[in-house]
Length: 333
Image (cartoon, rainbow, N blue to C red; front, side, top):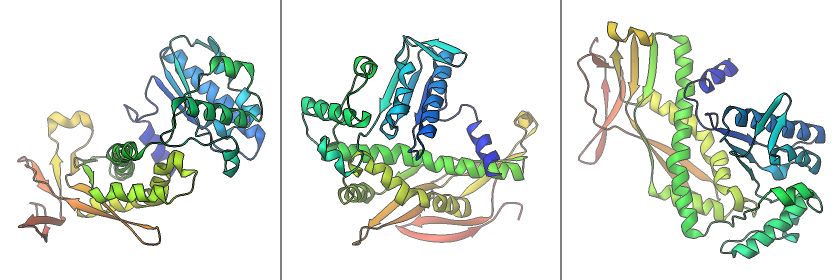
């Protein structure tokens, strides 16, 4: 059933990134078996060929290529050819953009080849990236890689850049993750009650303390977090709490029901339940390095139409800075 829900979600149009036309994205995993890594690399090439055949100017992103062993890396060579071939697909790549990404961090011994440092000059960073690439290949890079792949080293962000990145991540990625969580749950509701649709019209915001919490979390992490510490914060701290936020919104949000008339029958639903409250993220960094996460509902004013009625529930409103809870019910009651 969960698989059916996922298929229904990703099958929506327009589909969310990275499945829209013009963008092909593939993230490599770490495989214990070399044959599985080679198979994954070939799957990435096939997906890229399909994307370029469909859209000649496609952007193809292959993430974490450093996780592949040399045998699997060699399977990526077709991506550097003027004509990309995979199976019965042959697509010219002259207008396409193909990007390999890698943190080039392979453990504690990476220090032997150098580690990208904040504030490092472009030349020094390029030198480290070249040494790390040779380490990734287990020796000298093959001729096609050295000839056709241009390497751009991106040193870790400085303090100001990191703060901007955290703010950008919180504003876009976390907000999108919350909407994904709600869309998945709404799809489940729709399967139970096909005549009812659910929507969230609220917004996501975060307390100023959250940015400092993320930065402190990254500063206290191990060296490998330099490359994707924000991702670790999401996986370890925020992802387990997305469900809590969704439950809070579904149980305590202000909402109304829009009854559809005959003019709206083409939507195949008789009513839409709209959740209007917004979510505020708060965090607290504890002395032991753990992070407490809290979600707060913000009930903003909303103008109801005549054909809209409120669903029973518990709402909060603010008077003179004091939050008060009130029970409210539908007009039918």
